[in-house]
Image (cartoon, rainbow, N blue to C red; front, side, top):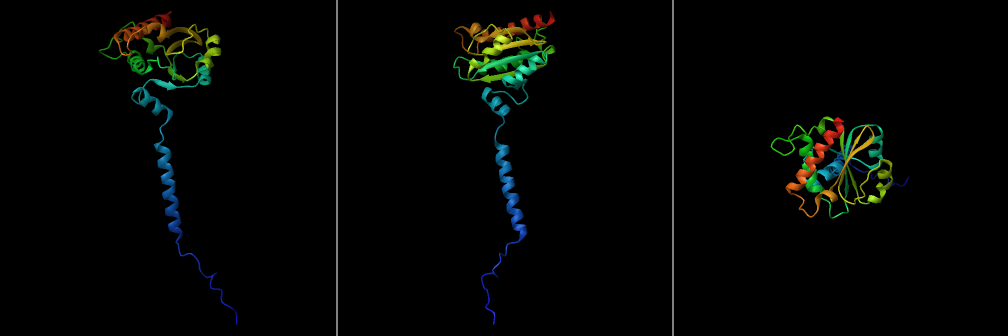
Length: 195
């Protein structure tokens, strides 16, 4: 008589549907985790208090160089994220108001038509401005600031610079003087683009 093997007969009694349900559950859990991680643009918007439909496109130095060489008219905002003197948090909303010529603001003027000439508004956030040395030399940017800087390019050439460290002095970040500085810069840009 053959001996019975009582251990081999023990087979799992779990239905394949149970494995499918467990697999779907873990897939949905992983998807929820991935979707909850904010994108770079979402982090940018929350950091600077902007709504999600703003004018800024995040860029890198390499992409920025490519955009300029493609001879687009671009407005570039360069921020030193490690600098405590930067006033980007208050200036970005002001720049957006100026670009959009919002009603009821000092930017709503016939002298301000920058948005008709600019193809893109790019934002570059760096923690080390030394990486910009070659970029500044190539495009003949005169500013050597370690703070907030706005540069306009027309057809691949430098058009105008706005160096916040030269314009702010000892003022608070949300003062009327900064708003006038931004407005005057946009008026200057309009004149330069028309030329």
